[in-house]
Image (cartoon, rainbow, N blue to C red; front, side):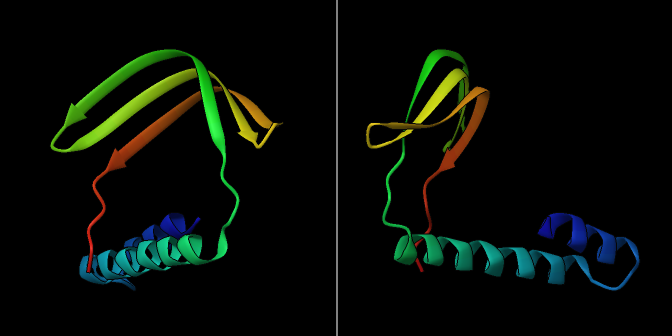
Length: 92
């Protein structure tokens, strides 16, 4: 949602590309800090099939099919496909 709002303001000439980039960096950092401090639950997932994987420039991309998410022993969600993009986190 935030990306669409920033894109709108950028297209209207109200935000510069540098400001959009700065806002997104601060948003990502805030979300990461909030998740680390406030979320105590752990979710596990299991996929029936790994459709595709790629490792390029220290970024992993995984495409999974028929994925089941569990919190403890409870199934929380079952979805057709999941795309995971993971990279090494940067420390400040």
